[in-house]
Length: 250
Image (tube, rainbow, N blue to C red):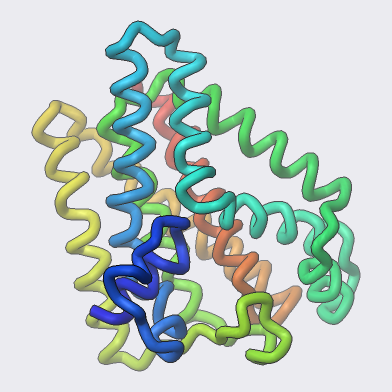
């Protein structure tokens, strides 16, 4: 329970700490419960998208509002990670230099271009995707991105990490528990998609895991590990791959 609340506190701006004050060690496991946070973040996007269109808002504006709602809810945490990832992997030529660039609070050319391309592709692809898929895509991408803590070591020390926390790796027992958490997180949005006639969504589910695997291999080669920024980039790019793939099925 403490790790779940820690994940909600860490990945959103809502005052969950007023309900439960998680101990510091619980934040070492926030990635394990990240997929369950997708119910909230993806559900918020879907609700805003559906609600604004029902009120007569043009779909182009409704999609922007849906994206903005998640940005506000998360404090643009993942987008900040994507920008730092693009700057580091785009401008860094060594492990040390890549980590230095990613820790720099200033955004560079690669970060700006990466955010522009990401947001443009997300917005345009959302215009043709059924609302029910929005929740599924968010949760599935978080499931894929959350695998990284069991695949690679953390690339920084706790003292050098931006948030002062090093995420804990996984034993085979924790891998089993995490698989069950991911299955639980996916069950509800996937059942909803099947119920409303979007059964083809099942065929899209492996895509973000392939994207995560390829990015993980790149991170292992460049850094020998991952950082919090890498987690944010993994989530957004895995989710984007679902939206882009859905263009061929919707």
